[in-house]
Each structure stands twice: as C-alpha cells, then as structure tokens.
Image (tube, rainbow, N blue to C red; front, top):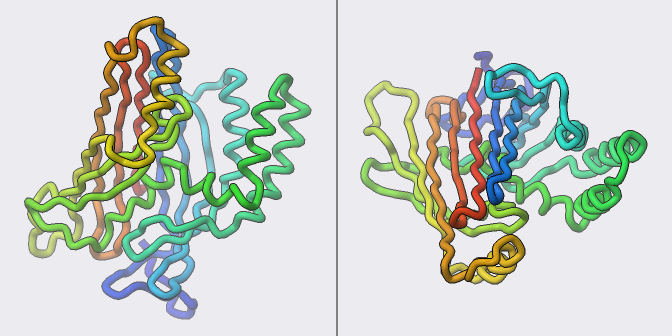
Length: 293
C-alpha cells in the first residue's frame, strides 16, 4: 500500500496511516422465497475507497465503482440479464461515485455529493423511460427518493453502506465484553423495515505485534422499539396467507464479522448474513461480503 503523499493536504487521524486509495470487491446476495416462489440474485461490485480529508474528527471517503455485474450459481457472469436486472444495474449507476462522510469509528454520517447524484438520476431517468415500458410507478418512486428533502435519508437507509461503514474501528474492544449497536434493516420483509440490536464482540484476544483484530456480530430483533412494525407485518401476512396470523411466527437469524487493520484503521474484510422467516409463507435471506484486494 502507498503512504499518503507528504505534499498533499490529507489530515490522517492519530495512530492511523490511511492509504490514498484502497481496492475492494463486494458481493450482495439475496434470496426471496414467497410461498415457494423463489428469486435469487448475486451482484458483484469492484470499487475503490479514496481517503480525502479529515474535519473535526470526521473523515471523507470517495467510493468509485469500476465494475458491477450479476453472477450465477457457478460464479459466471450473467450475460443474458432479465428485465429487473437490467433496470437494477441502470439505476445503480447513479451510485458509481459517492462522497461519504464518516466519523472516527468509520460509522457513516451522510452522503456529500447529493446534487451530483440527482443530476445522474435525471440522465438515467430519461434513458430507462425510453428503453423500458410500464415502469412509470418505479420511476415516480425514484423521483420521490431523489427529491432534496428525501435523498439523504434514502442513502442512509442503504443496508450495504451501513455494512461497509459499520462503526467498528477504534472502539476499544475487550475480549469477553460486547458492544451493543442499534440499527434498522431496511426492506427486511418486503418493504418493511425492522429495528434490531446488534452485539459486537472481539473474537480473539489481541496479540502483541498483531496488526489485525477480528470482530464478530450477532443480533436480535428489537421488538420493544417504538417503531417495531407489528401492524405492517400483520397486514403483509394477511395479504398472502389465509391462515390465522396467531399461528405464524417471525424469526430472524443474523451473524457476521469484520477484520480490522488497527495500524491503518481500515476494514480489511466484512461479512454479514441475515434472514427473516414467517413460517412457510415467506423468507428473505441477504448476504453482504466485501474484501480488500
């Protein structure tokens, strides 16, 4: 890895040697089983994170995607994309360049270049309206998300961005102790968000001269949260099942981990898998993986 240019204006946090540019490969896997009707997607992204500057303890990174494609079960690139995949890639292109402000723990705070993203959406919007039929409702939804009053929240709800910048750096992890973190899984069940409590813990004791640490994560649903969407879940179940709702149970499985380079304060690897299951009616499984190259 290169050291930051000594002639640049980079402000490197104390006890940190953040490099100029780091390369990552990430995979997003999703599987939805709705009453036996299964859909599976595996999306791969290659991107860089460029450290730009620090400001009052915060840091600014630029994320630039160089490639994005779907792969099949045999890890071959999908050449013949279905309509949904084509649309997904086209819409995702507005996120090819993100300026992301994070705190000293690498917890995402906000997206900075919102105007640039809005301009990209206008270009993409025109293209998809000419290329695809019967997508007016989807375009209107994105129009709403891209409005100035909504766009920041749209990005802050992004599950992958929270996985990429989870806030696990410089947390002072101690073996045998857990650090609790409240978060929300967006679109956990269809378009319903679920609040959870994530518990993070050190997997192995710190060793002298060992530059990396491994952090494990697990979580439980926060059913006592004021915004836990029980009514929305019941309505969703009622639409797809003739069964008595009381006979059904919502279950969540959630686990993952991170490898953190304490010398550079960078996350080398991140893995997360979770699933939400409602009896035999519905199951959604998502996996996020990213790795420094």
